Image 1 (cartoon, rainbow, N blue to C red):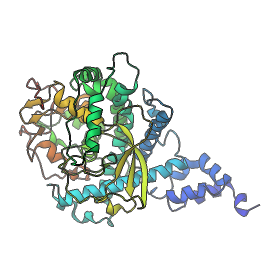
Image 2: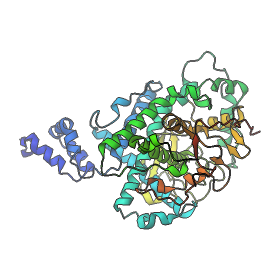
Image 3: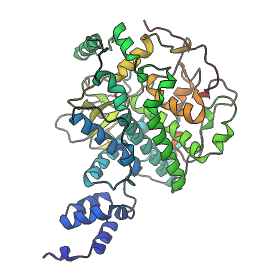
Image 4: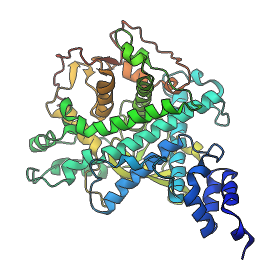
Length: 483
């Protein structure tokens, strides 16, 4: 018998606990059946002692990995994910991570690092937010506490956007995948032909994607495409909102070494945030984390920014939005070493395989490429449908000319603001000018800092803030057609 097989279980646990990190834990657990058995029975104790665990926002990453796997399993079974989504088993407290999950978490972390690099280069070179706020922390080799806390929150928000994408996958794909007698026989036929023509074209110019009247009537039956039907949004966004609320609550109860963020009150129009919010530590954390989530949604999926994070693998010969060309992007060559990970992208609500450069510092030039996973039941270009429904379906979409309502992909965020804070996006939040409140938000990496330091403080009496009371009437909301 090998000497290692005669070691007491307690000694093997100590070997795991004193390993150099999760990579070594994964290696040790694969050594033999004994070590693998000890890992399975003692993983909570082991993970509690692994130094730093080498994964920022580990629990959020694990939840995103497990939620994505639920979507994968549903796709392989030819189904949509279950409703309600089984969130109870997502956290590490429900069960310890498997070795396969640990490996996938490392792939998620690599993607988060690529996104961080793109973000920092974006702030440094093209965003109007001043990079001076980060000071020497732009040096990737530095990791002082303030920068470490910034990264923890930044990565956490990335993973939560992927988590949200998985939870909302069913709602956005339901019009295409669920049985429906009233679905038009030619549903999205014209729109699909438009998209295929665009991707086959040589000029790289975005083409008009046309929805027919029957397409619009059918899509309006689903709350995610009926933007002002707030009373119908709870069944869609309620579970996600409750999950995020509970994560904020856990953070307060945990009182860990990552300082809780402060309310970002500068984005609120009018008087200070209601006292019941300021005096509630859980809602204070939820408010700040929702603002951080909002920035990451725009970073990963938005069309208001001058840059993009992902190249479309079906359209990788050009940079997606036509005018979003800030860098000389280069395609990943087939022979180049890459890493892969599957995520549900928030704007598409479709499972995508992301190809990433192995060298993180290459990520802002050789952008990650998103390729749809095969055999999915739904429609991949959900973002196109949301855009067309917002601009061409007759739904109210403007307060005044030049001041649009909230973009449809932000419905879940507005739901959280309404439900927990009685707030909504203000009338001028999305005004089309360089220093509009929303544009100021997505240039504000300070949202992730430990201290409440901001350069774009909006006075309390400034009518141009991002958020307003949900009680404030918005009778001016009306429809302005795109065509």
